[in-house]
Image (cartoon, rainbow, N blue to C red; front, top):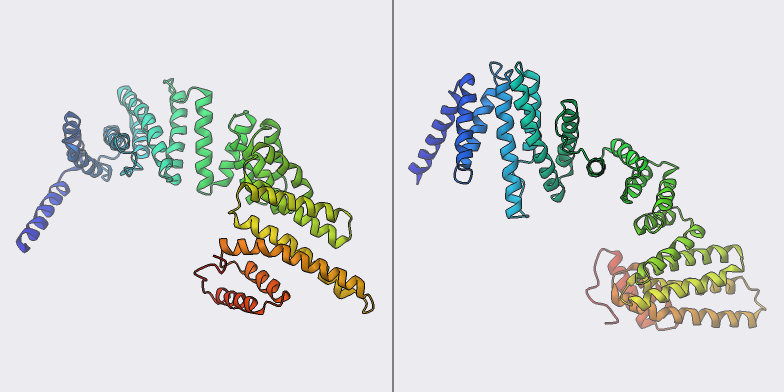
Length: 434
């Protein structure tokens, strides 16, 4: 076993030595010869492509040969075929990893170098022909990279494709992205990748240009808004408004507007948008729940200010939560919110009790009954919520308080223990109400 291992090292050393002894001036021709062998039988001679790559690297690293168009032309051909191997592998197996993600970019850069060092017409013509082939590889490989969510390399690949397009125009060649629609699609994907890798200014400009050119994909407004919002641009919301004016039926833009207004706590403006969202998605319980939340916040604000609208907002909130529960009774947030609606109102009534003079016995008793009824109405919802999530702190607090008010100190103590367990970093393995 030891002898075999030593033999392997010896073979590796000899192989490495052979490549190291190749003169740069001869490395190009040797690389072309290995590359030719690969092309004769690409399936069985894959190792010849790697051999060609090793040989051409010798020439690229040498000042003797790295100023020659032929060196770079050869490198471009080799890199093009490395890129093709990845594309072909993905056709056979979509889950295959991209082995040479930068190969197409390297091919493009090699042909650019070949053009810059060209002294004869045929050398420039060959470089442009190679770049034409590279355009297809850049396009194919960028798609693979986006599927793998390698947005950084995809961005570089797509940017190289943009540059290829310019070179093709300047040299009177067939333009790969000649169709304006195809160019816009390309710019959209490039902008998206730029956004994903943090090149926000570049992405914002590209999305802005697409908006100005009336590009049809509604997502440009959502992405433009996101970049502007992240940059704390006070005019960010106007991007969504412009998008909605062009795409009045867009749910993507609508929900982006809703999320913006939720974060800004602009509840009055939210109600109209959420009702529009319900009309667009009548089977989506989360939209009903969101509108229930809006009305609950409006109720609390109105109650605090003594507005007569408080009762109306309470009923609206209750109605939308119940509609959400009707669509999906297993949503924790909906069940918890219904319990909170009654619990919070009970707390408000309890505060009124505390503000009464001692001699207002009848009013106190009436408020006490109202408070008890509200707490008991909240209880079944919190029980369901606890069944759905036995470790939610607010649910455990509510159950502990309600049972204590009902003089059920055994259950109140049980939920006190469960609450302290969660607060200490533990976990309740089962629900009490299972």
